[in-house]
Length: 238
Ligand code: ADP
Ligand code: MG
Image (tube, rainbow, N blue to C red; front, top):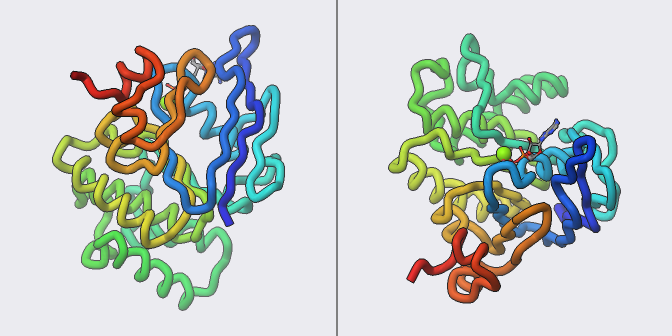
């Protein structure tokens, strides 16, 4: 499972309405990318899906259940942010294992799971190192490892690659797409990078001024943007 429904979702901070009327259904295992200008409410929307921020109107349903105050982990949701806060004094193993220790999982099971995740993310040679020894891309993979070790059904990514240099971003795009295929989890991914959106998404959602400007497959938006705004963000520049 991992179905997400946004039903007439609205969000205001005081008098300022950030999100006006967001309607979207995301299927199990789908990779949906949100793009839109800075300040248009992308992070706010992810936080609401995670249950970290309240909605001021409408409903967010995960597998038919309304998102409520339960912490994200109990609802099978994991978030990965741009600034991944690893514990500098802990090894890679302990950083990835941390959420499982919080759950008091037996040690043998923790070892098995962390080693499995490290293999997928090609961190198996790094498990005894501390984050300070790693490259930016490796550190981001540790943060992703910490998210996937709980086997969430929905991943929320908030510009996870924007602190990496171009070459690393290209590698990580491929790795994340592979991860999506391997895990078959639903992924909601926010980025301002057109290439990320076009290469990774099953569908792209373009946000503008509190509403969805267009939703569609990458090629559809690229070749048939419905308006100048979408064209400017994602369209064929020719
Ligand atoms: P994005 O991620 O698309 O850049 P955000 O979701 O971070 O945008 O923010 C959307 C708008 O909501 C911005 O104008 C921001 O200033 C405002 N905002 C975000 N969080 C808060 C908050 N806790 N209190 C007041 N305003 C907020
Ligand atoms: Mg943001």
